[in-house]
Length: 63
Image (cartoon, rainbow, N blue to C red; front, side, top):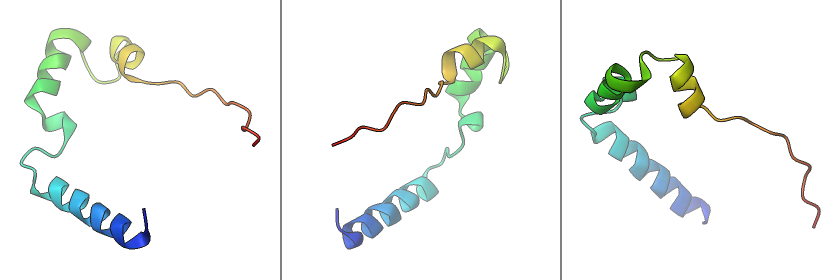
């Protein structure tokens, strides 16, 4: 993508986010229900185990 296309795409994404009625996951009724019914609370062991990823450093790929 060239710079102009990137800038237009970024502007469109920011505008789309700005126009959304529901913008924050902690305000999403489905996310709230997931915590109430299954995960317990944010940062609970179950939430951490299922929603968080782990980073493993890998050597750089040589071309």
